[in-house]
Image (cartoon, rainbow, N blue to C red):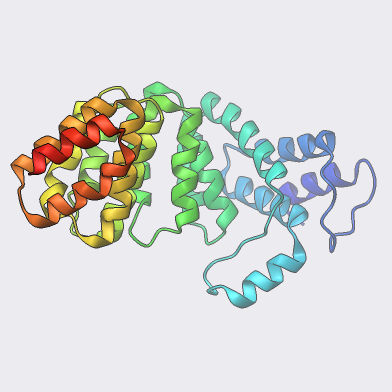
Length: 285
């Protein structure tokens, strides 16, 4: 048996034998030792992945895993590891990643290329944990990962991961990244971009004029397929500044007087208080 797998098995059995066919209960002391056995190989990507795979197999829900493999596409695997285990692994990987950033970026890239859902999750956690000096590389890597056919769960995972490192969302490269999404001709990529804009606003992004500049070019070609996500952006903007958002919609209505644009603005009226509703209505008449 491989050395990495032996280490993990020893860590697993040190406090009693585990039946490999049954998902073990999560004991934090034991789990910590098992994660240590994986981290020992952080600078050896091949052994690192083998050890991590053994850990996920150990804690995976065998019933759910078998069902998933039958129902899902054969190219995608998922072990259904308990969230508490994934959380502990993410936390420990974040610590080692900042001590060994080059290995972290290399491991994250290889984990993302895997066909295992949990590997993809952990790849996101690794890059999102890196400190400010690496944010440009993080944004570049995330930009390579996000594609129109990306599993929505992983897209949500990416955005949620940045809650622990909001500096990424404040990086100038992130705004350029959003701009590329929003200027795409692909509806799905635009939807992802608008969801990312909403999330960025919710992270207390203060430069609202920059957000207005990002979404203004989309207003005259606001297809029905992306109106829901644009509405969510407007709601997020209102939470930060109702007055500025009202002014933005009034400006948009004057700049683009097409019926479709005015119809969208009217859809947004219920999100405002009566005063701003009246102001926006007056601008449309």
